[in-house]
Image (cartoon, rainbow, N blue to C red; front, top):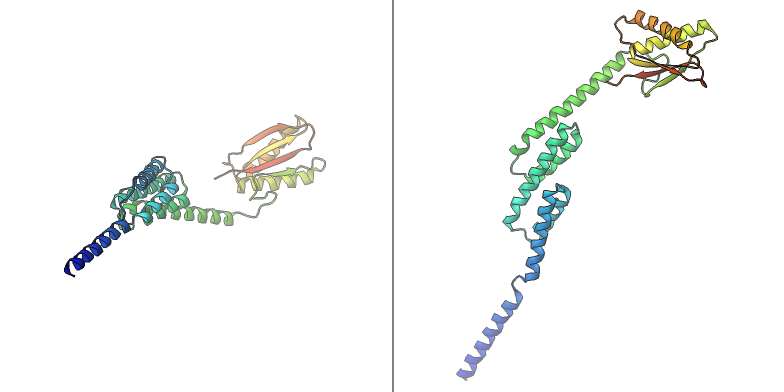
Length: 238
């Protein structure tokens, strides 16, 4: 019985060893090649500044091998690329895009807040500057008297002139001059006859200078045969 028992135990041990080998097969060349290709694609996305694509590729690789420390260098490269993008778009004045890129850098580098501190401060200051500018514009708008003929929110306002009634024309020009000064407008005088322009320009200029002698009135002459006399008021952009 002893020889049979020994042979039986050896057979069981061999079977267990064989099963263990079958349950943990080594990485096949196909798997290794696929991972190398995925890493190469990630590197290409980083080199091309396709950061959203690179972030997705990195997440897929990390999900496949969460303990692969070689991926940490790509995570840092991606975070630094987002940080650089944040600086660039902030310099261009796009505060919202800068904040979005900075948030991605922070998510990728949660243990290195100092690296994002400078850009964060710049974004905060830029937002404050935007708010200050908007507040100043609002206060300036509230300080202006109500518009008489123009729409302050429009790119331009066209006012048809009443040339047949001098009293009405004078009142029109008074109102136009007030808006020109208060809302910093350039004026295009459009008339069907060449001789209409000089005296209309003179009438308007006298009124503007009376309201503000230092105002830089900019007039444009347009002779348009098929339209009645009119003035186009164009508020200057800040």
